Image (tube, rainbow, N blue to C red; front, top):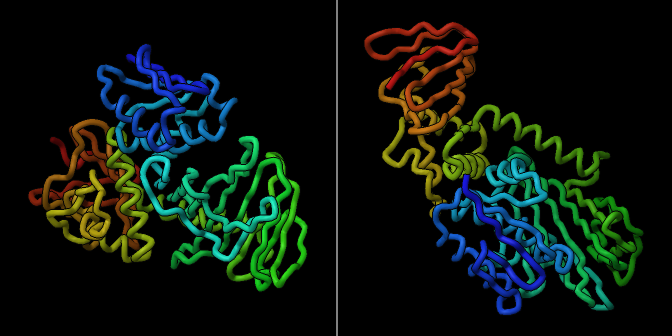
Length: 398
């Protein structure tokens, strides 16, 4: 495997042995586009290794932008094989497959306002809890948890920062917000004001008081002891924010165990399929989504390699499981009416279910095998293939 190293120093980005790009001549967005253009021109390289060569120590915020925003964009948008020295790169690529990221550090975007009418007092100035003008921010939609994370920083004096994260947990059934948590870390005395009406709906590590008809939360924060304010939109239940989040994650784990399509060789398609399933589940609900996946396929079914238009996700998913399998379950028999979608390389795995059957399907370039949880007959038109329970049986070969 041929690799190339990109080094990030306090002053420059050194790409390979020759290309040098200076931080002084670029905005964050401009530097992203300059580095991206250079990386895309490189040929004959199997992997690009990113190395911190002083940037993290001199400007940790820039290094966070590189490793938490740019890297994901290069993997997803440019289909580059990226590794970051010192990070768990297996976890990095797993995260890429399960999250959707929006940031003004890769493209112009409107900053989110997740906590309207909440304010942060800095040096006597009252500021909304939203990213400051031209400061990078990141919003992450995590499909494993059904939650959203928004991260940004307030730039203080002497190149110091307050790191802000807002976590939003949603109800599994109707996608309504259930709980939000504001976390602020750094080295500063932090004062947050919020509506007085929320006094019975929050839990915080800070000190509570009232002033000018507002609820005031204050704390001397450090990186190790951040301020946390958890807001429960339906009132406090006695559960911690983490417990509420874990409850909702358990529901999503059950959903993905039933619905996920696992693809070993095409990560872009894998990620887009998950995103389409996730978004459509949020819009339709679980049962209607699954009914949609088992309908007859259309000409648009499975067209998920490019999701620049997300208004027609339902059409792209209509009959998706039937399209993959080459048929559907009728009267507790699997009836194949056309050729299943066998991948050119790698494997695809998915599950067919009804109230009586659970059929695990595994396709590679030469065959489709299934493992039902009960004895099953597969009708192929000319014959009936008997499939024993809990054993892989080949039902189609190429």
